[in-house]
Length: 281
Image (cartoon, rainbow, N blue to C red; front, side):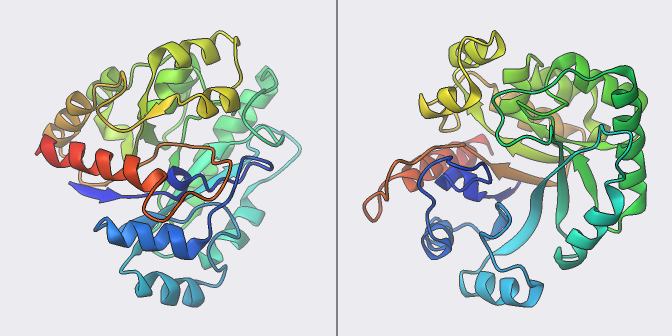
């Protein structure tokens, strides 16, 4: 089981005003202290943009890059996202998976517009153009507050495009999908996994628009693996039986109000999650 980390587990996020942003040296150092050897890139600007500079920094901590979260507007019929995306990915590591999110064009994930028929046509067309037009592996990340959030929207992508998926266990559950059922029903469409455990009661409040996504994250919607309501063992068992050999990226989105003391804060939850994963084997 190939396990990686992500800076969002340390509260490092692309959303303006998300919370206190920890420095790369602390985040990468704590990843290394936990024995991790791989990470996703985090938001633009967190790590050096130039691939050579980034490689030197990550090498100091014994880390490799496995992917990067890339929010892109795909639903605008008058906008071609491919040229700008190609230019941005020039600095991406060859082996890094492009974890694509169907961005709304707005900051944050607390609201999204409705998608009309022409928007759906553009989105599905762009997904396949991007998947076939880039040298990197591309996966679509269903994500709360993006144009692909709900179970119905995920099903529509599966039915009408050939794009591979990032199975994000938390965002799928929050959006109303069953990540266990999806892992069992469509393992051949899954090429990357984000492992999140979730408090289902808070997820339901987000789904019913009783609280925003940001409010729910601040309230602790994401839990260390094994302490939430996602059946992690069933998902890992199902994917393993289907021959999945990709990465499992641990993600518990958090919002920090201040710098935690050394050895405290997010590292404790990531350590607990690693211990849980170790027990699955």
